[in-house]
Length: 261
Ligand code: NAD
Image (cartoon, rainbow, N blue to C red):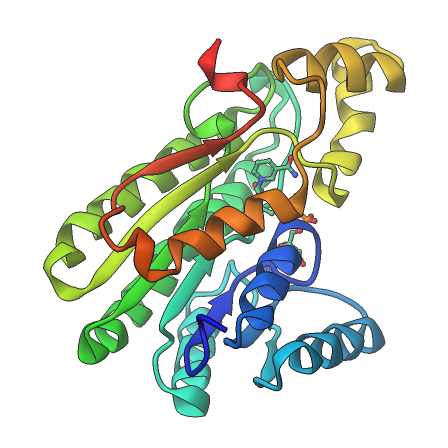
């Protein structure tokens, strides 16, 4: 197991892509701090599964990614439990779909806080601990929307473009310290985040559910297949390994060819 003795914090990991990343890291021996919202029983089950995978520890921290104090406390909790964190995955994210003139200002603020500013706070807290150990891996889950825009997603597109700039900057600042910082940019992955935006897209564009899936979501993806959470997690796991130590400041697409067009 390549991550035995390492510890990881994965934000937004009680669902979807983050949970798949937590599973992939735990399966390779990393102790994992899960983060995100969810039912107590369901989270306990996830923790049992993660620690059962390799015998490494798994904890949950319910830090709200809109709250800088809670974010800093979560990183310190991971540090106190295991040292590090050696691996930080900035994955928490939300979406809201509406044309600019109707876009609620509070949704803009929430998307920027959770999808972008939270990564500033996690990295600010975690980088000194990584530097002290002379090793670190930071991976931010950006999106194809970090490279291209789509209508009605102003806040999300702005936040994801910003997340790439932020991660590249940290990559340069930490390049000589044994730390890498990269983004992975998925196309459409079938998760609750995508499921939830279908009704809004139906309303915004006057389409049926099937039309949204075929003509809006998969229209952009030349493979005409959803990416899987496990495929994204496999790329994150690779970036956490020694073979990826020369990859830093990159934004790696896993989008079925979307951004090649
Ligand atoms: P999801 O809705 O399945 O999971 C989101 C996670 O974030 C959950 O664990 C949720 O509890 C957590 N979360 C939400 N608000 C939070 C907050 N305030 N504080 C702490 N945790 C919070 O979504 P997903 O599709 O797995 O998305 C994960 C990441 O991948 C996001 O950053 C998203 O933008 C990105 N992404 C998703 C897709 C896709 O098609 N699903 C594509 C590209 C990028």
